[in-house]
Image 1 (cartoon, rainbow, N blue to C red):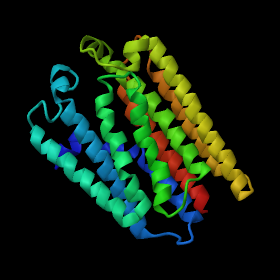
Image 2 (image 1 turned 45 degrees about the vertical axis):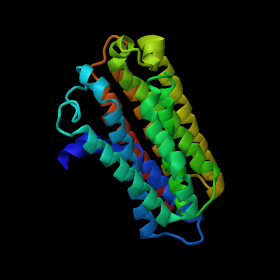
Image 3 (image 1 turned 90 degrees about the vertical axis):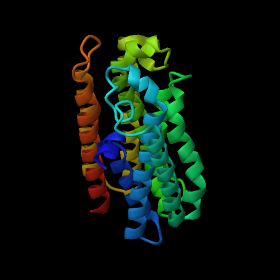
Image 4 (image 1 turned 60 degrees about the vertical axis):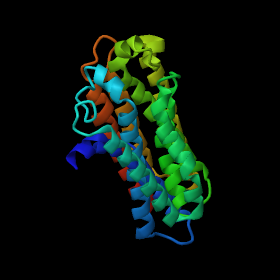
Length: 287
């Protein structure tokens, strides 16, 4: 079990989960049915199963590449801890469990599962033919807020869409930072990424622009939510301020000539930003 948790880097679930719970909370407040523990549990299961399928498939598909990369050759499949066939069976099982969980939520969520799986599983192929792979990863995680909102029985709405765009730009931006570690390896293997195309300085500049767009989406969501509730949501604005400060902070950690703090910028900073933002906004909305 520990090996499979490591295979899918389960701790990284913290990136999108707070936004999914935020989408669920907003949808619940707009829904005539109100809060449901059953729906909440199914939303969490959908998140876990979809992400587990995506990560395991990425490790399965990239096993030969990972074996050549000094940074990734210790991963479970190239290291021989988990057999490729077992990893693929794990992917199939989680994909089926994701679809089953969505079936028990509502028909719309179930009908949208093939699209969601196409995005989150298809991402693993993109580095082989396009440098826009970071945006496909961002799109996969961006499905969390709007998907959880739809799970409550509501239709499409502006605020969860704004959060989805915020996640899209945020994840794309920090994935570009993470990809800086493999710039030289990707170039030698003819793999596509923003760092390969733009170099370190250009990649970091684009990441800054994407995070500026993410902050803009967050601020628009704050403003729109204030209009909806017809009064100033000070805790929501505080959450937005903390989130933006964490975005700025991670860009102070990584320099074109110093990548030693990439992991702190990638996991710690973004994990804290997501957790604090989601918790404060949910608390603000409910109370």
